[in-house]
Length: 306
Image 1 (cartoon, one colour):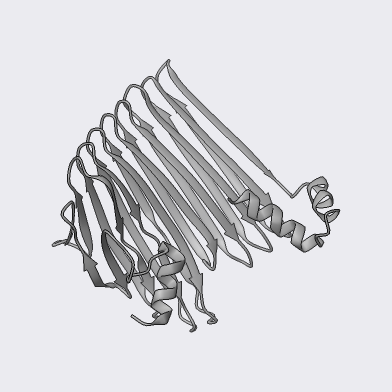
Image 2 (cartoon, rainbow, N blue to C red; image 1 turned 45 degrees about the vertical axis):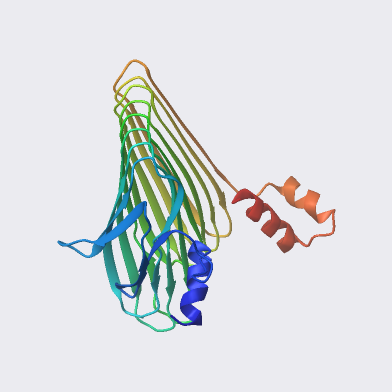
């Protein structure tokens, strides 16, 4: 790997190979280039398609696995299928994400299909960051799919971040939850120029006392367009809360489409959406402290996306 590769890894996974502990698998331009396994985490290639299977032993505690993807080749369209099998009562942090550097005129694209299978009592924190850079006219396109299957008493916390450089994304996240499970999603997106971002959430609360909390915070500027679509089905005694907050600037557009379906008398489902511009009083307050209008806007946006 060269300095460009290491910079991309730093951006998307805060990853320094000289210091990293735990298991990892690095994919570059459609191929696996480096891998490390541990006593508790095994990574093997799939036999029927391009991708890997990650196995975490039961009762594993506080281990970390990195599975970043980097693309530096213009015109590449990469598709990968990664499955995670998390053993009973295991606790693990999984850090993924994709960084694309495109200096040329052809589009570069990555589609990552990730499936998580959590056994009873397992706990996962999943962090996924998407980032694009480069001076070329070729687009940087990311279309991730995340599927989550939670067995009794398991929990998955997902943190999804897209802040810079992605021209187009169509993100789908699906969850199927059994009894006493919890699926928490925190999404942060910023778009500018003519960028387009669509995120869709589909969660089935099947088990008694299953719960989900989805929070989306986004900023759309210039001529960019964002769509947020959520569908939560309560099929048992359960709780679901979806919250979409967006700031709109310039000629940007944000669309929020909520759908909550109560198929059980004790399904408790809530959807909240708030879309608007930066409040004038917020700008004035910061400007009285000596900030310019641009600095005040940046301060508000950075705080909103934290």
